Amino acid sequence: MAQSQFFHAKISGIHTVAPKDVIRLEDELQYFKGDIKKAQRMTKIVGMDCRRVAQPGVTPSDLSRQAAELLFKKMEVDPASVDTIIFLSQRPDHILPATACILQKKLGLSKNCAAFDVNQGCSGYVYGLWLAFSLIESRAATRVLLLVGDGMCQTLDSDNRVVAPVFGDAGSATIVEYSEAETHSWFSLGADGGGAEALMIPAGAYRLPLPKTVEDYAAYCEYLRDPNGTPWRLTNIYMDGGAIFDFTVNTVPPHILETLAWAGQTPEDIDWFVPHQANKQIMSMIAQATGFSEQKTIMSAFSKYGNTAAASIPTALCDAWQEIERSKKSRLMLCGFGVGLSWASAILDMGNIICTGVTDFDPPADSMTQQEYLAHWQNKITGKETNLTPKEES
Image (cartoon, rainbow, N blue to C red; front, side, top):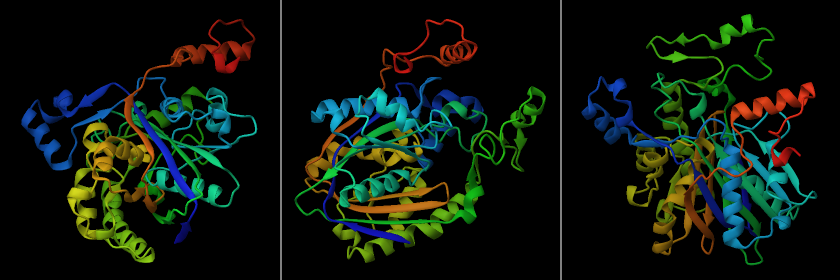
């Protein structure tokens, strides 16, 4: 297990942006045979109340970009002072180039800024922080902008009730920089690729690339039903819920306890525990198994935003920040776990940071619909004139 301790890296600011559109279980009563009590019962048991869903054409990078712009303004940070930008997501804008390079231009960062992407899921925020802290501690960078965004909703089939009611969309921005004052933090990370197929999008990249003919593409659009009758498509996310639950039960609590022991901490030493917002049952189980009371476990974001994958921990932090700040207690333990399979925890002191909460996404002036973007590329490649070229492409 990778374990790291840092002494001079700190989070100085964090912000999250979520789409305005909300879908509640009560809006999908057709999946409960019209029985609102069944939907309410599901809300109570699993914590599923509502999820935030982005409009077609809005990507995790759009949400994260706006989070960064708002954070820059609140912190009065000059974008040119950022010397590294990391975009972490399972949903990049394109297979290439790195979305971080596109965001460098859109955010007005210096051309001397390092820019790269990280493909990681539910453990991703902690993985991203670990990378950012490593760069700062080694003095390879002085100010890192970590953008973590995810969004499954546009690609999910609403008839698939294993994943559709669970996932939501969100994007976050975190600034990590050097601290002259000694600030201790501990990170512990691990992975087990033997469970990779438990949570995977099988097709669409290079192991199973999209076909070159329309006829051959039909097999990729075909619905495959599992023994329970749940529909899946090869180009959409597949999740073996039982295998993921077993992984969570068997791997995550021991990992948390091991991390605490390595850092010389106990649950009593931690002011707030912030797990990945998988669902209420899983979060409660992990808290109970590791000795964290539910009073100090942040798990309300799931019922408001859904499982926002890599963005779930920053969303939970921003959503609960007023409560955290009022408590005047700032030692936090973060824990992410999921796709990979992978897991990661961090123990941080997060006092004196600027956290501007969660705000609704407001489409920027240079945004394009998917149809407009398609027309832009059709015209760009064929050499036809177009008035649809966005500012960032000019």
